[in-house]
Each structure stands twice: as C-alpha cells, then as structure tokens.
Amino acid sequence: MVRASASSDVVLEDALIRDGWRVDGALNCSTTPEAAEKQLGITVVRTNEFQDKNFLTDYWERSFQLVDFNVVNRTKFNTMMQILVFFDKPKFTFGRGWYKEHILFKELPYVIAGCTSYYELVIWGPEGDPGGFGLLTIDPEKTTDKMLWMTYRSKARGLLRISLILPSLQNTEK
Image (tube, rainbow, N blue to C red; front, side, top):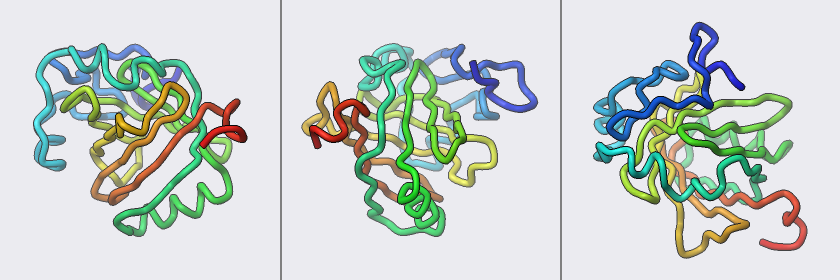
C-alpha cells in the first residue's frame, strides 16, 4: 500500500470513484474533472463505466517494462526523462484508479483520475511533478495481451510514444 500523499490518509490503491472521476484527492489531484478538461481540451465521461472497465483492466496487478520511448514533441522535462530511461528502463504496475512507475530505485505513484473513453485515461502525476494532467491513449491495433502501445501527452512531457512489455517476454518479443 502506498500513501497517496505525504500529508494524506488516502491510500492510492483504494480509489474512490464517483461519476467517472477519482474524488478522494489522492496525490492532491483535483476532486472534480473541470481543470483536466480545460488543460487537455477533453471531456471526461461522467459515469464509472470506464474507470471500472478500460483497456488497462486486464493488466491490473501485472508488471510491465518500458521497451520503447520516443519523444514526438521535445520539452525540457521529456529530455530529462529520456536520459533517465537510458540508464534504467522503468517498470509499470497498474490498478483501478492508479499506476506506479518504478525507476532508479524509486516508486512514483500516479492517479488515473478519469477517462474520456475506453482507450483514453486522464492521469495525474506524483507530487512535485510539473506535468499537471496528462492523457494516456492506447493504440488498440498494436496492443496485445503481452505488450502495450500508447501515447502520453501533457504540457510538461509533450507528446511521447511508448511501449511496455511483460518482463518475461522482453528478450523474445517486440
């Protein structure tokens, strides 16, 4: 279990979802979707349908390793990220309303705050992350049960194309 904030009793893994949005304030994420909608130019679905069943549901509690990291729109932040992943390919674990990134001996928690569709999730980063809200979009045509292909877009991170694979398959499939 991970505390969702240093100053909070909210547990990251115990997501409280109401009307399609995570409302428990985990990682100091806004308890309403309006700020994310404005920042990303999106509309959040106002039902729990996609929080309870989305493209990540089948991957909950499975650990994936980053295999591809491509910067589409360069920013200072994603330049730093590119250097970090050169030295240590992060692992990602997903759950209902959250995911964790494991890199350089650190665990970084993220909130899955809401969804715009089955394939698009609104993400809120760890405390101190300058990115604000981000949009994680799956590529359903490339994704398999063993490999995830997606894009991530936020103000600080720009636009990234990434792929993740189950670590046991890393040397056998790409």
